[in-house]
Amino acid sequence: MEQRRTGKKRLRPLGLAVLAATMLLGLLVGCSKDNDGSGASSGNAANGGTAEENGQGGGTAGPLKFSYSRPTWGPATYTKGGAYEKELFKQGNVDIDVRIIPVVDYDATIKTTAAGGNMPDVIWGWGPVDSFWKDLQDQGAFLKINEYLDQYPAVKDAVPAGIWEKMADDKGDIYFVPNLIYPVVPFFINYRADIFEELGIAEPTTVAELEAALEKIKASGKGIVPMTHGNTVPFWAAKDLGTSFGTSSGWAPSKDDPNTIVPPEMQDANIDFKFWLQDLKKRGLFDEEAGVNPDPSFGETKFKAGRAAVILGGNLQSLYTELRKNVPTADIKIMPPLIGPEGEQGGTRVVFPQDRGFYVNVKAKDKADQFFKFLNWTLTEGTDLRRYGIEGKTYTVDSEGRKVPIPDEKREADYKGAQIEPLKFIDPMSEKLDWDTVKLNFIGAGIEDKFEYYKSMFEKYAANPYNDYKDPTVTSPTQAKIGAQIWEDYMAKVDGSILTDMKLTKDAYKAAYKKYLDAGGQKIIDEVNEMQKNKSEPNYVD
Image (cartoon, rainbow, N blue to C red; front, side, top):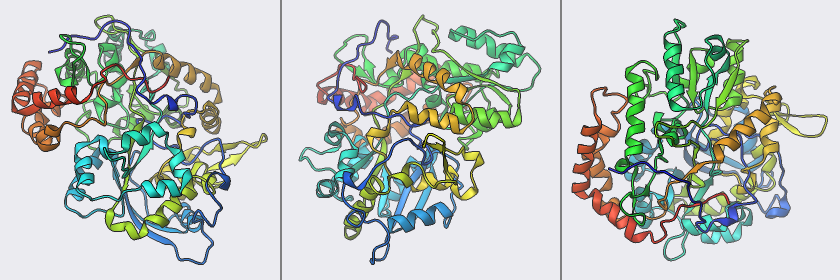
């Protein structure tokens, strides 16, 4: 197995320098969640045509009807026929039959649907960076969209050219519309500062100090969970804590050959981190429901109710406002990136600036032109509705003329995020890093005084980026053929049981992985290394 990564990380370009100056950061809410239609800039028809040309409502033609499946990062409480939906349908001249699936269940559920050929007109997936979706694409399941991108410039301009190039096949054909994210998405270690102060616990700066703090909280008699996690799977919620162990939770250079990259399952740092979390759970320091409860929001629910002291990940704005409702004297702070057991300085796991996206079913070709007109409209004439929603319902206008978001908990039911997120498509890269936008969200939540602190902690995490060295668009042929099956045969049980089987050991994990390698996993690694010529550390920011 691989040793820990040590030393200063190199940041090298991967041909995506076009991302640099124009990235805008929406409010960070886990990995890749939209910000409920709120924002801080506007668009107009000059970006891509007139309202009539862009398919805006009000014309004589009937609405475009299409079916749509997508994941939702918030609660799956969307109900059809709500007021926001009606307004979108009216302005956009559409009638969307949307099906949502919680993000933690989405991949497994939608792959079954897609494999059975029962796909909606528009379907979210991982695109050509995933062998399953690439295989369906190559089989002709989805519509080629090059001509629509040329015809509807706002859609094309929303995605940097470097990302479109990554989505194209070897013929230059594009089938997939990527959902963009800012690559630096810190999952902070948030904690109850009032509880720490009450118990005389100083803010941890190392993993050892965090562990000692959790032990003291457990022994305090308060009857609260020492540490839980935010709205995603446990190890991803803990991705930035994992960096303190030296793992990016992704591919990294081999200790034996820096020109060879290996997956996280071959890296001791990654395995040590996962079994450290298992040990915390054994000792009652990490939430007993982690890895067990199918509801991804259980940890945030506990923290907001005042029943947990530390949470890995989570949206500070939402956590703070909801917690103060239940515990008016509560306060939340963010631990700095921690120093790990081997002296590794933690930071943040940087991500490829795409998190899913969508295809158009080839069987929906007759609807494609109208769909891209609608999509173009959302990025031009429909920008205000897409970004901000409806005045008085999702935002107010302050004395300076700024659109200030209304916090979700203060909105009417029909205008809450759970009613808006399922109807979202894409936002342009030019909206992904805008501190003015983030500040407006803090103002809207009534915690403007927390903004500068939040920004400073973001910068501390971002100062030490941990990258996945694997180019996500490189797909091993063996992985496409048997990768899923051999993973299921040898690794799925052990990898998915670290937090549920307290008797599972590192040795048993490594033995299972050895069987996986012998069954074809090593061939997959060899093919990735052969196909990916550039193995330097990517840089998606500078």
